Length: 326
Image (cartoon, rainbow, N blue to C red; front, side, top):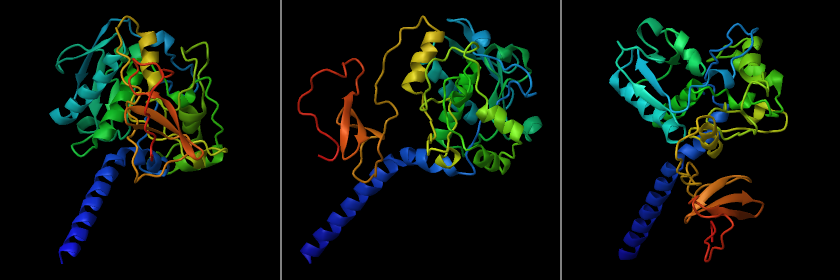
């Protein structure tokens, strides 16, 4: 009887560990699962809405480095407003700008609405680019935020829209992005709900790439917060991009370069990278953090990329490295 009870206790303990690790990796798994989700939230470009005029570029809509940008809410309850305030501030850690949230009766540069009242029919989320916000009666909108919105969606959508407010375009429209789209599959997907886009809208929001002369971009970053999620079913070569919900390393360095003058803490190279788990299956190219180090999955093994602390060199000699699974 004692042996049976010990076996039961051991099983329960193992199950508890398994559930803990599954819960810990839910966000990482969602990156993969949402690629084919019909309910995936998509930011609609609000600039160049006529589809036949020159798109606004990051260069001519940038704020001045060091500027305080005034932001106000035109509606929304205190809970959703607090989430937007919290995640908008992420940009301040890396860009030499400041967002000052003021009363609805005050003058402001950025004016935010939510899907309620006079704007109940606007189900999309969008933002005008940079200083274009100055000329709009409302310049940013959140079409799916409510008291039941997940923390991940609050974070991903808010950081994304405030990226536009700082002048950033969608990363898949980076002039140096070379995405091998299956255009017919993409047209068919976005023609259905919840988007119901025409071919012209798909062309404008996905396939159009901005001119190198009008942007500051030099490299393509599939991990950018400004990138749409892309299903492997929508490319001819199986390329895909997950649901990016945090600033990438390139996002941080790039925004610091166009709004310079702030002392930037390099942070941690493992920020946003999931902790390795024995209960998770990994594919070639996946990255994990384990015992203070960053690893990338390669055929049959793991490749050490370096310590998580960016203050240390990735080429620095390290002793007693513990690899995932060892």
